[in-house]
Amino acid sequence: MIPVTILTGFLGSGKTTLLKRILNEKHGMKIAVIENEFGEENIDNEILVQDTGEQIIQMSNGCICCTIRGDLSRVLGDLAAQKQEGKLDFDRVVIETTGLANPGPVAQTFFMDDQIAGEFLLDAIITLVDAKHANHQLDEHEVVQRQVGFADRLFITKSDLVDEKHVADLRHRLLHMNPRAAIKQVNFGEADIKEIFDLRGFNLNSKLEIDPDFLVEDEHAHSHAHAHDEHGHTHDDHANCDHDHDHGQCDHEGHDHAHHHHAHHDDKIKSFVYRNDRPFDPNKLEDFLGGILQIYGERLLRYKGVLYMKGVDRKVVFQGVHQMMGSDLAAKWQPIEKKTNKMVFIGIELPQDLITDGLDACLV
Image (cartoon, rainbow, N blue to C red; front, top):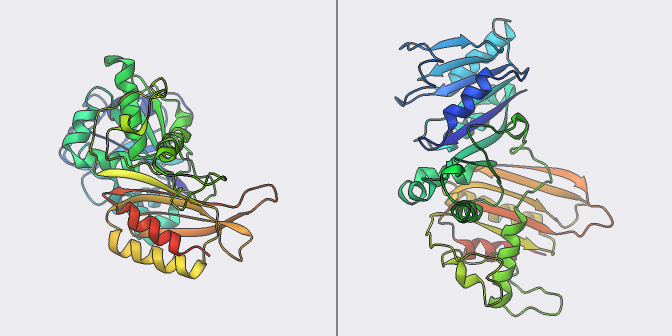
């Protein structure tokens, strides 16, 4: 299977700089870069000869670059065929979406088309975020929020143009939109190649990366909102602070050293985490999730969970994009491990209470 990385980010976020590095650096990898053009200027004229037709250009370091104006699955199929025939030599693919594109349909290509799904493996979606302009872009363009929501990894670029507090506030905002994605600052496209490839963001494994700060802040909010019993549990101990309000209200006196008072951003795309230590009834859960996907599938960008199912001695993992969900059995629960359910949902104006209550109703 040929691994594929989707590179996204709004206009001017630094995708071209990063790509130029991938195409020119001596990293010993043979990478095919697909430029998904919609009239936006392609990877600088100095790299690609301006030509109206589709073309493949061989780079000096063994990478190849092709510009497409057509259907992605057709181009991928063509690349795979040329690789099999020995005409092209590459080990992985990077797809750059245009700055105005929603990466969702690009990701779905790898699940919908059987031929593509049989030859290519979607590794991760990486989103570049321009530190200087991100807040304005997130406020103005829902597509930028989508790019953040879909990401497995977020690179904050151009942070040298703003102060540290600005970066910290931006990081906080991104975290609440997508706590699954690791956030890293990079300058001038200088991300380590190891931080771009083989992230396995679409892998069905039991690693559910949720930024621990996200949970700490949420539980902190929760401890004021609900009286806990002696074990620290409440019926709605779901690690979900209501992110509609200014985060300053999540804190009380004495915690100002830990949190800045953040500006109010009413982002349409938000995330929440569901956790519960009771096992799920498999049939009830399947019915409920099926219904949620049917009704809210378009608004669900990414979701993933590690589940504790009644009568199953192994962890069950599931994840999906929009209506497409996959699930699998993972490792056995170890005797020392605490069996628990942990799920994260990232989407557009999701009915958090309805989903949370519905999941509660599926517990044994």
